[in-house]
Amino acid sequence: MKFVDEAKINVCAGRGGNGAVSFRREKYVPRGGPDGGDGGRGGSVFAQADRNINTLVEYRYKRKFKASNGQNGRGGDCFGASAEDIVLHVPVGTVITEQGSGQHIADLNADGQQILLAQGGTGGLGNLHFKSSTNRTPRQSTSGQAGEEFDLQLELRVLADVGLLGLPNAGKSTLIRAISAARPKVGNYPFTTLHPNLGLVRVDQQHSFVVADVPGLIKGAADGAGLGVRFLKHLQRTRLLLHLVDIASFDPESDPVNDVLTVTAELARHSQELNAKPRWLVINKLDLLPEKVRQQRLKVFIAQWRQVVGEEAARKTPLFQISAIKGEGCRPLVYAVHQQLQQLHQMSQE
Image 1 (cartoon, helix red, strand yellow):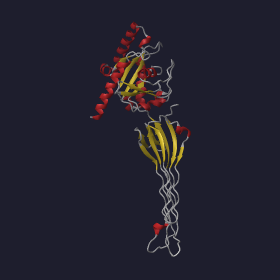
Image 2: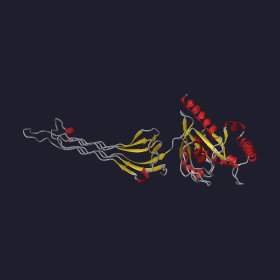
Image 3: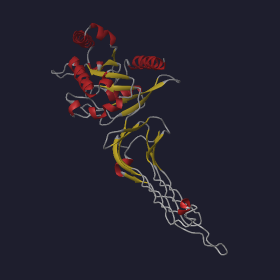
Image 4: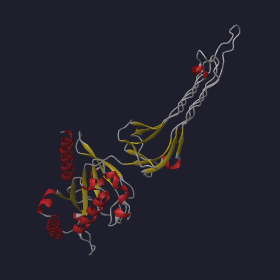
């Protein structure tokens, strides 16, 4: 199924039923008094996170959701029935905001989590509520209140522990195929990945983590160029970023260090919070280079990287060497990522 991560919908709660004006009329009971019942409550609209749903595609084809109105009150002290509520099931990780004001409504990041989107209107009062010592035959009642109505923006942000970054064709999809059961499309051309992919990485029988692959970034992505910036929001929940670098590009204009800086700059322009996350460098496609050329390119890359970012920053940035398509170096990377995630989890608990 096509991945759909955004949708705009209108939700409208039901109107409350009107109160009734009625008087008791029975044989041998003169002046029975008012017995008009209240109107029923209008239906409300809720949203609930459901782990069995992984896309917002349903809300692309149906965009208006209206709950039923409450029934009107009747005579004989009969209250109108309340309308049933509507529950919209959305994927875990759905963020809901109001379109007009941009006000944050909810972040449904746990299975079963529920939020009220639009409150149903309350029912009107029947004339039995207006009886008094001076008003024995009240002929007034109140109408039911209108339900709330909102235009909402639904945005799905995938839940992953690790996010993959890099230029198009850096090997992100190949890596996620190598370390998980996910099978995203892989091709020898840019923008093979058109939507986020998730993969569950098994470290051992007791431990695992989720990795997310998003479309590659290019220069000017923060201004709308390419595809990747649209999906960067999916990495905001991650705890660790792996920045893949193609060391084997035969393009004479290609510069691996400059490639890293290009992605880093676009990341910072998009979100300082995202840019501040721990980020490791993963040198990929070593299998395409002969041993001597491989060692020479790695030596040049590391030297240039240290010169650009400084010795201290370079030491603080873990660097891994892999061949994703052959699986070389992938298991040590997986174990290192798992250990880092455990450390980050312990730090968050302190």
